[in-house]
View 1 (cartoon, rainbow, N blue to C red):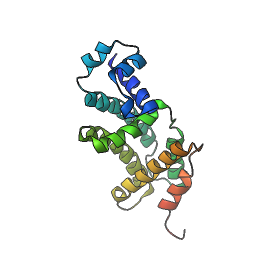
View 2: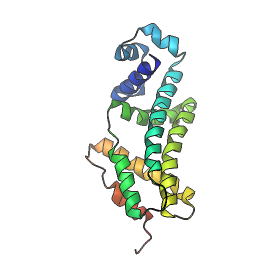
View 3: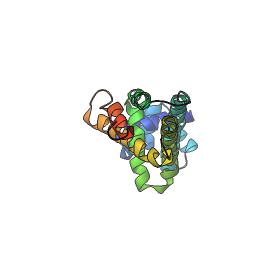
Length: 181
C-alpha cells in the first residue's frame, strides 16, 4: 500500500506540481482511505521525500543496467549512442515528470536535498563510467557538465514537446571530441 501511495504522489505531482499534493487527492489517486496516508507518512515532507526516493531507486537500477554495458574502452560515437539510448528510453509520463518538480522543490526545502542528490549521484555514476571508458583524462571533472547537458536537453525536450532526443548524441559528441578532430 505504501508504494501505491508513493506512485500516486508522483502522478499527482506530474499532473499538478508539488502544490497539488494534498492527502485527499493522493488518497483518491491511490484508491486508499485518507487515514492510510497519515498512517504511513507523518508529514507532507516525508511523503514528498519518499516518493522521490522511490523514483531514485528505480532510476538507479535502470541507469546501472546501462552503465554495466560500458565495460572497457568505447569510442566517442559509442558513448554518444549510449547517452542517446538512455535519453530516448525516458518516457515523460506523469510519474517521470514528477522528479523534475521535486528537484525544484528540493531547492526550496532542504529536507528533500539528500534524495535529489542520490538521484544525481546515479546519473553521475553512469556518466563517469562512460567517460572512463572513453579514456577521458580526469573524468570526474567532466561528469557534472555532461549530466547537466543531458538533463538540460531532457528538460528542453519536455518543455517544447519535441520528439526524439533533440540532438543529444550530437551534443555529447561535440563536447567529448577533441577540437579539430
